[in-house]
Length: 388
Image (cartoon, rainbow, N blue to C red; front, side, top):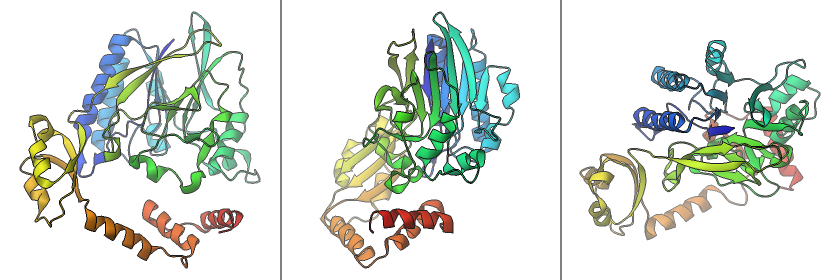
């Protein structure tokens, strides 16, 4: 069975002030073209379909067009979609029963009561049945709502394990898990990019260990933006189809193609490259050096520029705007700014600062709202455990 694994479409996302809908449409068309050529049996989209829980009408329209084009491919391809932490379960689940008639299967919610279980889809090839388990983004409160407030669940790892352990899975058969979490392998963490740091908690308290999923034949992950495996080679993040932050400028984007054969054989994993057009580039040098880099291609690309001039510059972005049409940001990096950065850190945080107050300030900045008393207590208990 041939599987396309993609995730984190983030439809509707902006790059600084730039609308990316046309760029997203271009890359989705590349995925459609690849599906027509390669004829996968299943396409997995592992969460974060939209960038916001309340997507714009344009974003909804683009996703609808993407689904429509995929549904028209013959022979028909089954599409399996889970919700991620950026998605609204209610909005993503809209028209799910209608879409299922066109082999587009959405799982936007976890089991809601003790009689319900993870959504499971079954497909067959010449080696027999393959079972796909669809696990949307899991938080500790989700597990408590399902198992009861008395359940001893405090971490994302405990929540994920508790929900998965309810399932009766025959691991002598071929099983695929679709999940959207921050997975770690013992003490090993995957590569992260700036664009996803807001979704990952300080200290790894939202992490889930790969030991819970190692018995699956393939684990299709979403959440992180870089294509990579974590722990076992068959536990994989597909990464985003586009570069969504300057920290991803040098990343290669792709569709992860997984071919499953008979039980106990390693899945064959290959990649189909995806190209961002216009591209995202990071340029560094003096003002004159960066101006000299400009060519017809770079002029149209999204560029993040780091200027290294030691002398003061007058309105450098205006001067650069004559040579580059899509400037994401311009920063100055020289001897003076480095000294200022270090002194700012020393001034902001010192040994007398209360770590709880620092965390609460950080939480407010990241989430746009104050920390709750329950969350503050969890953080206080963690710091006490480590003698802070």
